[in-house]
Structure formats: C-alpha cells, structure tokens
Image 1 (tube, rainbow, N blue to C red):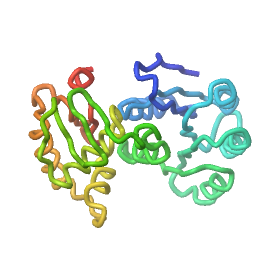
Image 2: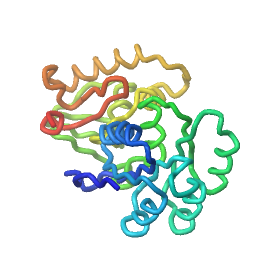
Image 3: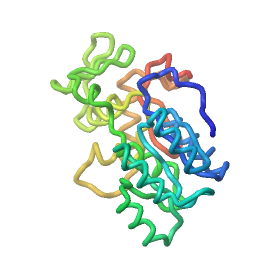
Image 4: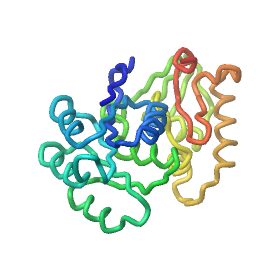
Length: 241
C-alpha cells in the first residue's frame, strides 16, 4: 500500500485508488494529484478495506478485478459502512459487470482505456467543491476577490470588467481553487446550452480572461494551464509550485 506525503492543503479531498497494476496506479495518481487531490493507493481488497475502516477517504477509484477478490464485493462491503463516492474502472465491454457494480452501490464507472480529462471530470463530479466554498458569498485567491452574489471580481481592490462568460469561468475555477477543472466542465459552465467540444472558443475566452486578471505570462500567475486536461486558479505563489 502506498501512502504519499500529506498535502500542504489540508482541506484537499483524499482519493483511494485500488488496483494492482503499478503503471495504471501511477498514471491515475499523477492525474488526480494534478487536479488538487491527495491520493493514496491499495493493491488488494483487504488493504483497501483496512484504509476505509481506519482512515475513510473522500472517494474510491476501484478496479473490478483485484488479486484477492471481486471489486464488486469490495464495493458492497464499503457501501455497508460508508456513503463514500465510488468510481469503478472497467474494461470495455464489461456491460453486465458494470450494471452489477452500480447495483452494489457504485456511483459511476469509467471504461478502460480512458483519457486523463475524463477521469478527472468523473472524480470532480463525485466530489464537488466543498460546501463551505460553494456557500461562501466571496472567494479569495491572492489579491483576487470573487463576489458570487454581486457577480463581481476585483484584484487588489480594482473591479475587473468581465463578460458573463468570463465570470462563469472564474466562478467555477474559484470554487475549485487549486484543483484542475477540465475543459469539458468549463465549456459546460460557460456555454450550458451547447453540447459541443468547442475548445477553440474556450482557449480564446481563457486568453481574454488571463489578460484581464493581469497574469504574468512567464509565470502563468492565477490562471494555470494543465495541458490536455484543463485549468486551475491559484495565487501567484501557488502557481509557482
């Protein structure tokens, strides 16, 4: 069982990845850590169950096939003691097993192979921004203050003139401060009536927003791109980490 160093952000959600393939665990860990999560891993059902009992995670990413048992059985055991969100990873074509996993209490399943953006998006949907952040009328990131009620953003006391789409992008990113939000989630937030993957439109909006936020292009302060995945909002000091 691999337990990484504690994250400096103690409020970050903990995700337990359960799989016996080291390469897959490494890949999933990199993606989720990049998304702002604290990641732990277990190779077997018994190891995973011990973690859930002793130090319950905020979410499980679980393979269907484990060395010492059935992932569906583990899901059922976890569900009897906890409502922790569970995402199954399964091979393409495992339709009946996926249905059984959902019947056992899983919240979602993700067919293998999958893209980093899709994995992060699924976990983000299971673990929305904390209730405290969502409920707060204002969110602060460095010199930025996002007023959710008045739909206004200021930097060092100066009001920024944002278009409605730009404010929606800031709102979603601020509510997930430090956590990567996928391109698809940003598109859905800014243009909810459209179903396409118009990433060019998103890139143009992000470029305008970055200019208005006064980002230093050499450091990408405040608005940080995670290539191939999405963006995150961080203070200048955090952006350099």
